[in-house]
Image (cartoon, rainbow over all chains, first blue to last red):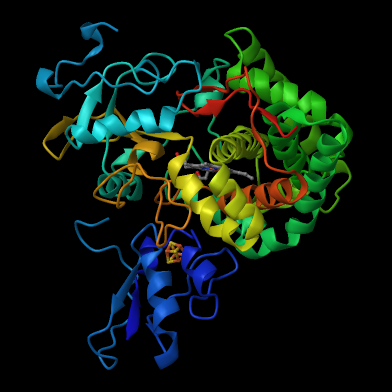
Length: 81
Length: 405
Ligand code: HEM
Ligand code: SF4
């Protein structure tokens, strides 16, 4: 499982970090670091809880395949801004 | 409320009769529950026009669904924050910063301020916050078996944290509580007078810190650089005033609403007292159930939104208490479940203006509840008294007399 981080949508609520500080790392301003997150076997529960707790919907759980990795998404998507 | 306040472009069938200022439960009400009273809008359409929905009687569009509020608040290009609320009350025109700036200027100041109130920074402030809570509650416990939570705890606690943030001693506490009360709840004479007093105070503090820097918020602001230059006097004041306005009443009201809920729900109260590790999660649910802020944006261009013809200059209201009772966002939104998980509530807003003080506010609330429950026995609303609540721009609770005799 991995987590797609839509960095541009992150507004620093830090709810993900409050659930799982080792999985969701924040910068000095308190916003999530860019780049998708590969989740280890035993950490799936806190990881998906953390992702679900994001009020901005900036974190997307992708449990289909661990191999499918996308470049960090740094632009808001069209029509979704 | 007259219909001529509705602009011509608003179709009459889109006018709703709900208002955060005038609907039942919004005016000062004994034993009221103004947040719950807003939930009725979810029986209606996702957007409607409320002809009287600001303090000065302006109409606004009202966005009811959490997902649509997210869309509005994440889109600052269409929905602007520039309103000069504080300054215009004084017949002036300057923005509170960063609240009334739009991106990209917003981001410049926001990045400057973020580290001052980041989750990590807040951890360092925690011991001082706890010390204040303990001092206040111990003195309440020592002086009897009843108190007014708002006057004796919630307000002095919030103000004292603010003073600590600004590096000021506590002996001016009562002066500040008075200013805050007049500014937020005073009449048309008291409000501008308090605003002027607070401005003069912020200006004076800034001048002091320029002359003699210490290690505090205001020193940081007067020494800071944005885009290679120092901040102007107007910018320093825009920041100082905002932190004053944004951080006092909100935290005090949150603590008041939370303790009022616990005073009325002895089982939940006992659960949190006997298992204090549940307070962190419970505080999130209480923030969902009792948020206090109505967010307003101004349309920067014409846009059709879920069938509503929003026109340039229209006000658009995203009330956090309405989003937090949205049944398409929360299961059983009208049930307060202190063990609710995945609680993506909107109490601190969405989008780039997400409450800068949210991490501090959360800790203040949790610490306040922890120390209150640890130091006082089972409490209830004192017989013969009724807390008075009100709606409006910032929802509030005026008094909360509790008793543990
Ligand atoms: C429970 C307490 C609080 C609540 C419910 C609350 C709520 C909010 C909300 C909803 C907003 C968004 C406003 C908008 O988008 O127009 C906001 C912004 C803000 N809040 Fe809070 N707040 C609280 C406590 C605090 C505290 C303690 C501070 C300061 C120490 C603070 C400082 C700010 C600032 C500076 C902004 C503007 C941020 C920006 O425009 O980028 N707040 N708050
Ligand atoms: S919860 Fe969402 S908005 Fe908050 S820090 Fe994490 S990713 Fe960012």
